[in-house]
Image 1 (cartoon, one colour):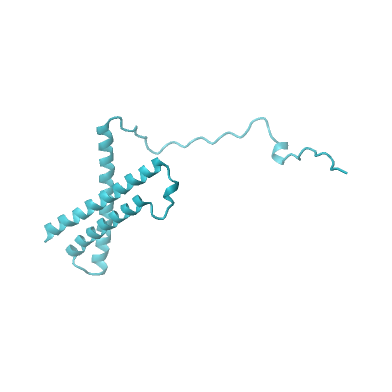
Image 2: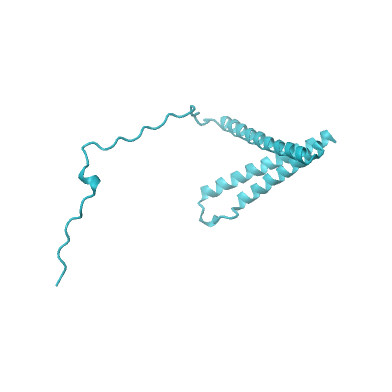
Length: 146
């Protein structure tokens, strides 16, 4: 004896009470600020990248100065020595982070596509350049402060 033929499935409650008009989609929120168009020339792209690099360098320097102020306050250390050392350590940390990002440490890099590898290498170059600039600031402070 075979099974009886399968009947249609029982409709869900939303299907039974479905109206003619579906729910309207929520409206997209207004952007908070006007989006700038991407640069169209090589010079524009270079200036845009340099501006972003300068902002990243300023943020990294501000973080290093904040750590330096905390160390100077709580450890009551000589501010000139701690300032130079902070930039040396910050630059070395950024360069090490660049090397770690570029090597794909901790991730399965053999699954990456070519474009993903290029992006990782370019980010590692940025981190190493930031580290070199921070280290250079430490050298300049070392020369200036004696």
